[in-house]
Amino acid sequence: MKPFGFALGALTGAAAVLLLNRQGTQRVRPIAKAAMKAAVMAYHEARVQGAELAEAAEDLFAEAKVEAAADIFAAAVAAAQAKAAQARPETKPETKPEATSKPESAAPASEAPASRAASESA
Image (cartoon, rainbow, N blue to C red; front, top):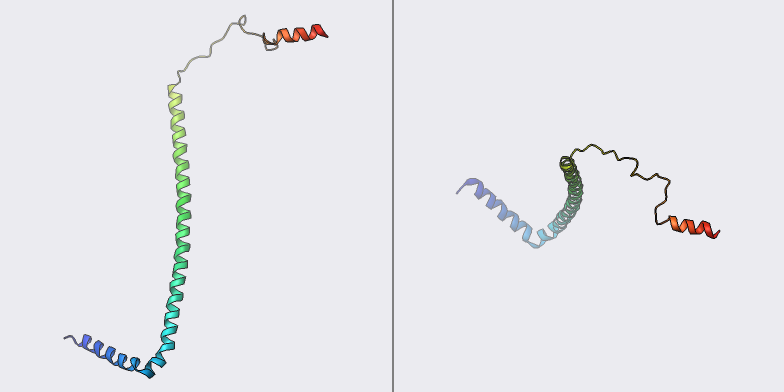
């Protein structure tokens, strides 16, 4: 047997005899109660701190997720625009003869009879 193990066992036994008798229990009870209360309070505080840390981590994750989605969307839009620019044939603008183009002040054909009828009735 190791000497340290024997000494530890002997001290534990002596402490148990002193603490477990009726008078020892009365003396140790307030100390044990205070120690348990402190442990419960520490446990509660640790849970609160853990919850706050988890909430901060969730917020950070959500912000990173939104930024990543925005970056992915921007990259997809840029890629689509580049693809569309490559797909467009580069044509020169055609000049139309002026005989076929209408002057901007001319009214459409559907409006002409109505306006003419309005002016004749007046």
